[in-house]
Image (cartoon, rainbow, N blue to C red; front, side):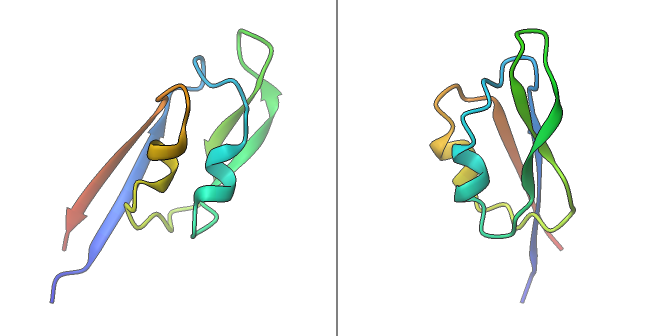
Length: 73
């Protein structure tokens, strides 16, 4: 049986720091940065490689700043 692995890319300049994605992630892959983006928001960032590609984060993001990639290995 193939294992599905995932990865995310976050557009940090468009992120408004709502933190919805952090609670939606079952693997705790996303956390809020202590730095701010160009708009002055603390942005979401990937903090580990445990992404399973579930897309929960991208689905709940109100600004559609998260892209999810999945691969079967």
